[in-house]
Structure formats: structure tokens, C-alpha cells
Image 1 (cartoon, helix red, strand yellow):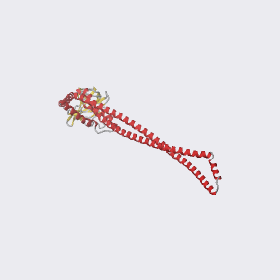
Image 2 (tube, helix red, strand yellow):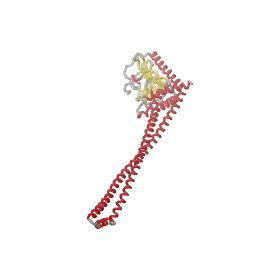
Image 3 (spheres, one colour):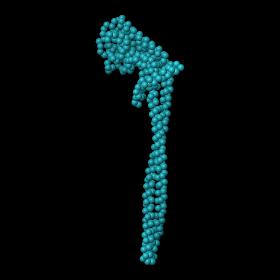
Image 4 (cartoon, helix red, strand yellow):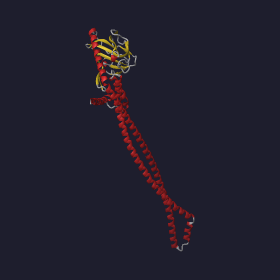
Length: 410
């Protein structure tokens, strides 16, 4: 039961951690950097922890930071699936409507073509009759008239026959015109139907691709969830070890403060720091700030007593100001560690310290001048990569180095 409560509490805090790590919802273009930022933060938070604990925390950070983007991909892909399915359904219905319209227009064309055939047959009969002597028969019919009235009657009959023939020709011409119009409409309807069917097929294929993308997005999210679950279990196993290591780091910090106060009492810091900004101790870029931090993976607060400057291994480290070396040697998680006292400032002994060096060129009691090379950048002690951990201390108590360095950090 206690273990379940521990896991529940951890999950709640990890939800808070996800907000801390990801911050406000970023633009899509920035999402790819979130996991990398979370890993760097985890490394900075757990610099004094074991490699196993750091690995567990980094895996947890990476998975936690990756979940919002993965969830967004799943949601977007599901939305695309719904939209493309609707579009595909609409396209299918439009294709069916277009095909039905084509069938109706085709039927109209066939009817019109039938009328043309009938009219053509009738005109063919008239032409055939004329060719076979039909006109001579009509002349003979007029010659055989018995009188004026009979002639008039026969002329009327001939005129009626000729009018009928012209009407039959006009019927054929009209039937052809109707048929041609119906044929054009049928051609247009056929092209429309074919275009609609192609569009429907494209929409169906788009829906199939969207469904495959949605499945892949869900599988990706499932993998992240599984990785997070595994990393959470690993972090839980390391928690007691991490807490013990952090407690040891706190005790080491208290020893550093005590040693500095003891040196000041023995040596008596009589000179005063002349003031002004410190010299930048190394050429590099700021990779981690000073201050108290909450570790969301192991749920503890810890002090990062200085500012970290990433630089290439072996880069020169220079004294930020002139002073006396009061410590130079190995100091646990700090690795090779040098501290230089610069006199009194604001009533306290003012000291700068330089950690994780690969080489040290000074010894306790030596006086060094501002800008003098005192060592080289390394990754000794509890360090995750080559950098200089730089501290400013007053009476042994650390304060933010950025308050005393040039604003440009150059």
C-alpha cells in the first residue's frame, strides 16, 4: 500500500514536471526540441547523482517531454481520419449522382437517336419514290384532269403531297439537332462522372493513408507511454540512492563553507576587493544557472551553487580577479576544485571557485593575478560533460555569479 501511494504521488509530481519541463504549449516547429531540453535539464539537476540515476531521469524526462507532441499527433491524425472519411463518403455520393445523371442523359440520347432513324427512313422513302418516278406520276395525274375543277382538286392534292415531304425533311433535321444536343450532354455527363469517380477514389485512398498515419501515431504514443512507465520504475529504484547522494553533497557544501570561514578567521582577510566586474574565467556559453532547483524525478530540492559554462575540454581557465589560492585539489563531486580569495567585500571574504578542471596549475597559498591561467576545463567529479562550474562565495556562502560577471558574459 505504501509503495502504491509512492507511485501515485510520483505520477502527480510527474504531471507537474511535464508542465515545468514543457512550459506553455509551443509552436509545432519547436516541439522537436522539447525532449532535448528536458534531458539537458535533467542532467543539470542530477549532476551529483550516479550515472544510473541520471540515465533513469533522462529517460523519464525524454518520455515525459515527448508525450504532449505524441498526443497532439494522435489527436490530429484522428481528426484527419474523420475528415477524410467524410470527404470520401461525399465524393462517393457525388460520383454515384454523376453516374446516374449520365445514364439518364444517355437514355435521352438513345431516344433521340431512335427518332432520327425513324425520320431518316421516312425521308429515304420519299427520296426513293422521287427517284423511281413519283414526280412523273403527279404530272400524269394533272394531265388526266377532266375539267377545271378537277384540275384544281388535283393541284391541291399535289401541293399537299409536296408539303408533307418538306415536313418530313424538317422532322429529320429537327431530330438530328435534338440528337446532337443529347449526344453533347451525354459526353459532358460521362466526363463529369469519370472525374467524380476519380475524385472519389483519391478521397478513399487519402482516408486509407490517414488511417495508417493514425495507427502509427498511436503506436508511437504507446511506445512513449511504455518507455515512461519503465523509466518511472527505474527512477523509483534509484530514489533512495539519489537522496543519499544529495545529502552527501549538502554535507560537502557545508564543509566548504566551514573551511572558508576557518581560513578567513585564521588568515584575517584585511584587504578589500577593489570592485568592478570580474573577468570571464573561460570562453564558452552559459549552460546552467545558479539557484535552488526542484528535482521532479526524485522529488528533492537542491542548490546549484554556481553557474556552468560549457567549453571544450582543455580550454584555459583564468582567475576572475587577483587573490590568494585558499583551496586547490580534489573535492568530491566538484572534481579538481580551486578557490581564490580576493579580499573583503560588503563585510565578507569574497572568493571565486572553479570546479571540474582537467588540470590545475596553482597551489594553496599562491598569489595569482587577474587573467592568469589557473587550470583547464574538464569533466572531473560529478560532471556530465566538459564545462566550468564557476562560483562566487561571500563568507563561504554562494551567491549568483551573474551579479559579478560582465553582463555580456564576454
